[in-house]
Length: 332
Ligand code: KG4
Ligand code: ZN
Image (cartoon, rainbow, N blue to C red):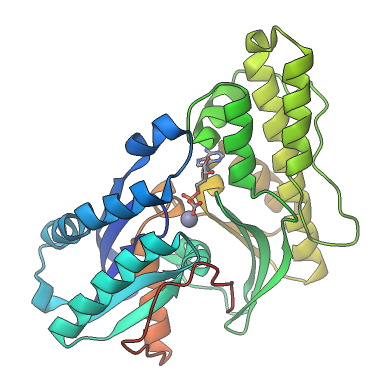
């Protein structure tokens, strides 16, 4: 009998549910976003996110079951995002998941959102035996991770803003909409990356810094009253610098730790220049770049179901004391 896992994701502004059959077959992957409600505020308002989850979680789970052609009784496991994320939002998901699993007499398992972003890259394939270097780039987190012998280890992280946060803040400076990443990505396509922006360098480490470049864009806009006429060039120049920093450190980590597979996870993994540059550079060096389709790189519950299923197979069991952890660390 195939095993059916329900995945639930409520760590930020997306309420998501997915049904996974065994380890690879995604039967449904439903996402309800509160972005439209957040847009007027130019960022995620935690209370709005929590309410959106509360109002939609049973609808989204129902839709995931319906699309998969399954009923609650068919489920074998409930996997839910435990953290990191907004605590109110996480509590909606973990409370719902525990209640559902308890009433069905099935196990519940808590999943690390960032590890799930990396593992999402292997939904359609096998995790390489000798591991990989993983780049996590989301709205709240940016880190380089080494995955070896089943263990995640952080080898570098941002000293200040997350990469996605920098995209969002720069978009705000330029008067673009929220979330800023997709807007900058779109604009950059018609721009010339001729303005000299640079990300902070932290020599001898795999750490990143993105707050300086954000300030550089702000000063540039303040000094150039007609900057609105060169939005595409600014977007292209900013994006080029961020991508350069992310790609350089990722390649250096692969070389130093002698890993031949690179994976990227988190919302910024959707960035077209990051995907293309990493693909080119990996090819040149003979590395295998594993990128998930876009539907698995944005926040989604298929990745949660997949990570939960794998942990369950490896024997992990969570009790009913499982709860949200806003600052849950990779490998923690
Ligand atoms: O992983 P995610 O969906 O949510 C978090 O867990 O944070 O990431 C959201 C972030 C936002 O900052 C958004 O601007 C960024 O991912 N993002 C992008 C792109 N699409 C989303 N950044 C750059 N280029 C994109 N195409
Ligand atoms: Zn995420």
